[in-house]
Length: 298
Image 1 (cartoon, one colour):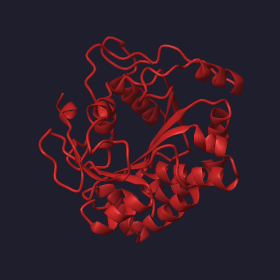
Image 2 (cartoon, helix red, strand yellow):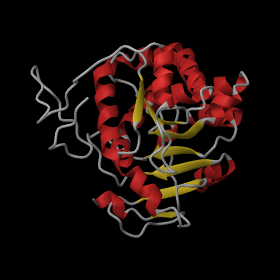
Image 3 (spheres, helix red, strand yellow):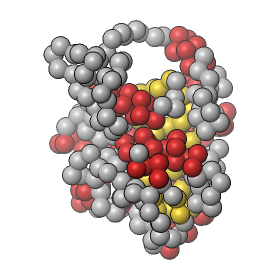
Image 4 (cartoon, helix red, strand yellow):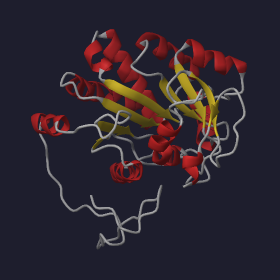
């Protein structure tokens, strides 16, 4: 995939019928890989820095087509500049607003496949950072749970970081999965926002509160983060790409490497568990913890 010279951070310059690599994203080459070829390429990837494992995996959410997920992964990888190899785990979403129930069934259908991919990567000692969005977080949590209950600790140990962006996962189910999975290499990161309209709709459909709609100012949520080894980060100050406020993770992904480095020696760093508030304009941040975020203004 080629990235146009005029690419703007967080945006996808979509190609038309005749893609122009000078102006739009463009697929310049495709190649089918079998399992051994896939793992051989992944093994060649070396970390660029201590905070960047070699492979980054994106698990898309509800209402995504394959093309949308692929281009979003490429855009985020280009903006972050951290991963030399990016992996898309594409599960069979209907790619339609009316497909909510069908997509939940598709998540269950795809779980075993994600288990196999993580098993192959983990048993090849390839470190993987997972970024899951929306309903893809349900797939991720259920997959990690399955790895745990089957005793596949080697695969779990080679997962460098799990980031759940706007997770559309019932909070009670989420807590049960967290308890079963246990402690990973780093605390599970939950990117939340109270004004996420997509999760508000999900609540109307399911009747339950999603983990992505938690309020970090709530003492109960702060206690949850502490007790369950979670990083629950309020990202509601970040720019959303749509009126749903469900896609702020794209802005977070672009700034994440710089954010990690700039906060490495601060009490509100991204290293430990806790409930945090992220200010997208670089101003002083309110309690419970602080993350300075000047990097987000660039």
